[in-house]
Image (cartoon, rainbow, N blue to C red; front, side, top):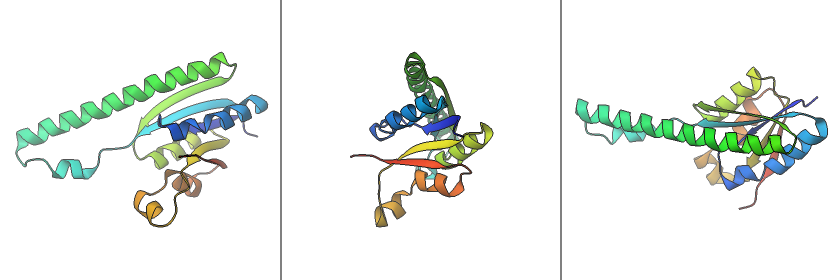
Length: 155
């Protein structure tokens, strides 16, 4: 039933709290663990704060692209290490990094890799905080095509 478990992991202590649940479930079900991170695009506000000269815009775009590449490389290194640790524990682990809106990328990865279960963290925000900050977990639950296990994390 759940032969592939997707664990979105952004390197935060919150995301880390999901791993014990996901790995125990994977161990019991002999399931693969897919670690995944999506690097969100830079905010359009970054571009609007730039001087309007072509040279300044080109330089800004280059700096932003370098920053995005550095974030992607850090994610790959972190997830590769984590996948290695899970493999050392006898689990079948994979990792991937993508660029784009996290909820969209998580759902697309889950669909493309026939994921049976997504295990995610939730801060448990409500009201104004949720409206202002949004919720990747909420978006995945609404847009996804497989069950989502939500672990409410501790601050």
